[in-house]
Length: 214
Image 1 (cartoon, rainbow, N blue to C red):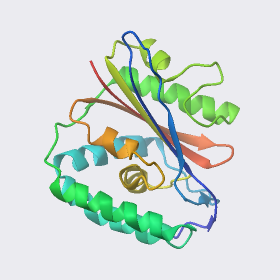
Image 2 (image 1 turned 90 degrees about the vertical axis):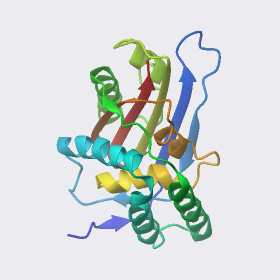
Image 3 (image 1 turned 135 degrees about the vertical axis):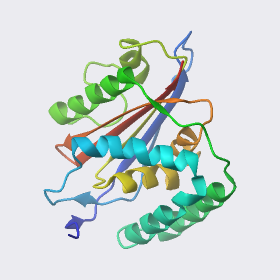
Image 4 (image 1 turned 120 degrees about the vertical axis):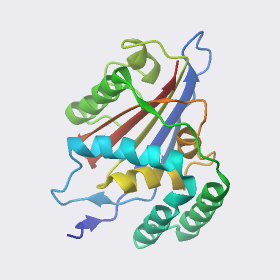
C-alpha cells in the first residue's frame, strides 16, 4: 500500500564525542527534505531489528545497498524543494559505497538498546526533537547510565516508515554538510549498536540509532 503523505521536513541528527574527559559535545542537525507520513503505518518493534539487520548488511556489502539509495532519491524527489541537493548527495553516497570496503558487523548491545529506547519514549511522551532529553540528558549521559563506552554516535530520523528508508536517509544525508550520519554508519572503529523505533506526536515516527565502541 502506498503511504499517504504530505510535504513536511524531517530531521536527521548525529553526534559524535568521547565519554572519557568530555571536552567537546558536537551536534549536527539537518532537515532531510522528507515528508511527514499521515497514514497509520508506523514501524513496529520488529522493524528495530530490521534496521539493525540492514545496517549490518550495508557494512558487509556496501555496494549492495546502492539500489536502496536510488530508491530513496527517486522517492523523495517528488517532495523536496532542493532536488539538486538531494541528487548530488545521492551521487556522492553511491560513489562512496562503490569504493567502500566491507566493515566489521555491529554487535547488538543491550545498554545501547535501552539508551535509545529511553530517548524514543521521551520523544513519544514529551514531543522533544534532537539529542537533548526533557531531563537535559544527552547521548553520553544516557549511555553512561547503562554501560562504559569510549565513543558514542547517535543518529535520529523522524517521519520514515520503512527500515530501508531509515538507513538510506542516513547514508544519503543530503542536508548534513559533513555527512555525519553516513560517516557514523561506515565508521570502522564503532562496533556496537542499539536501535529503537516509536511514535512521535509531530512526525508520527522516530528512530534512534546509537553506535559505540568500548
